[in-house]
Length: 82
Image (cartoon, rainbow, N blue to C red):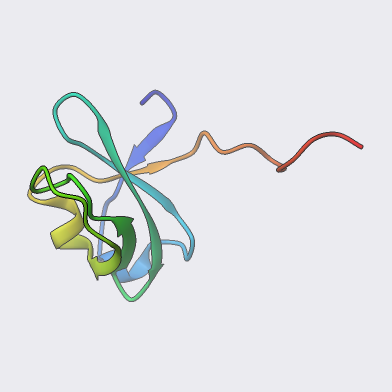
């Protein structure tokens, strides 16, 4: 992920709404920082081969011992041009 920066310092200082990514072998796992070191992510298939819900977890659980980065490659606007 070329335009992602490593998370440094306390998770509580991450920007609200930061798009977080962490490598999981053949793919990157994504989540959104919602404040106080908590991340919302899709839990399905990240630990088992079973579907699971979208959930809010501590950043440490989201990371699962791997490096977490902030994705900087976000479009400046959504949708189509008018």
